[in-house]
Length: 214
Image (cartoon, rainbow, N blue to C red; front, side, top):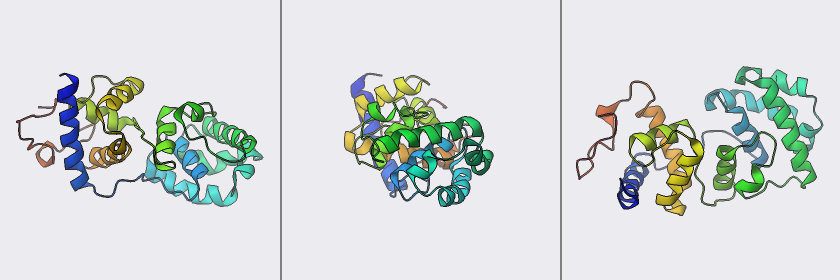
């Protein structure tokens, strides 16, 4: 499928999912931008629901970037143990907050600068750029990668290549919200296992297109 066809298909997907999920936002709960950064790091190989259960006590115990920067890794671990990979995540959280403290507590507003922080990959960086700064962003989580390939919008399971292919066809002002909607769509309908194809809101595309599961 050429770029023109993929762009047209992306427009259709955006239109449909905007109607199905009018409220496009991250499901992670936070009050301060740095808290979203931490919550997103915790969400690696962990559900957002679990992260949201853990972060209230974590953020109460460490109420600032400086508190995290000065914390003992072992104490951070106690609060995040149920999120998995807790030692690596605790070290990353402390070290990223140390780096942020040196920057005056202000999160960078570009993917390139954010990914210089310990433990921050492109998925996390794009989320911050889109949700905190309102800039064009493409958050390639497992839902986005799976669904976009099924729909023929992308051709790879590689996050970086998927991001590149989506940036070529998505309207910049729609890209971040679409990624949030794809998460909801992936949880509700287009699941990794046993997708609910009969309930898919994208099944009635005018040109008769069906996804790669058909």
